[in-house]
Length: 389
View: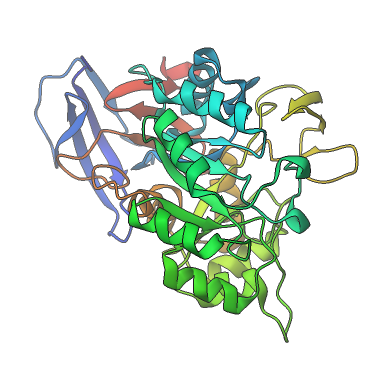
């Protein structure tokens, strides 16, 4: 049972909504009431007077492999639990555990493990699984082991979906692969997000994929056919096609800071999804770490295979927010859209990604510099800065 919480004198932000100074009353894991000078008995009272705190919907990371030494592909309850425990400190209240291109056996184990995982009260909630590969282009493998790349297979996917307890919510796919369009049609029919990524598709092939039901692009700019004035590729499609929501890794490594600004100004906050694509080394000291059986050299800034290829990130959602805010001068409402509202829309979740009565009490309190002050997962204080604990 979550405690009752009264948060008073804070700026409440919602995607597409005007900021307002208000109080929030949380009960039974939900936002019970929003208003001015709320008088409620509560187990915990949090007063933002004179602190200029801003409250956003808790961040939703739809593309994260691991953190704090844990990885989805470890295929253990401890790994998912460790990942879910580590995320609230960066403002993330829910996520899609993301797999990577590996053998059928390895992916099956990870999905079977995910089928029974339930986050505890103070952990970020695992909303489901994002299957990134193996149905991708060998030409755009990146850090995905090419020996495990296979053509899209509905039979294989249906087996995996059963093993996962029907928890697969998003699949990254190269639509130009043999059978890719039919695969996307099948995903769309089941309400699963088909995200175009690790793909060498032409603009025309992406448009065909959109007609089949594709609705997203995986990590813009990275491992996809680039923009060329005679062949716009997947990058051009991401900018042009309004049916596509677009993931963005705003670490200034995967994407130059002006490329982040370009995406914001031309694609817009209503279609961008800030993600981390983080691997197990996030939050740990620089060194050598494993990613799908490959050694990854991790610095304080990035993670790379021995050949120099980027291998996920060590980005936090808090860091992504700060970076985007710094280079775009976007509004808090736009940040709310890019960090939660758009993801909730893509996943068909009407109880998350917005601050309103009756919605899940998934909240992140930020200071003026976008530092995470407190994270609340389903009404439970999951993280608070040391001086607040």
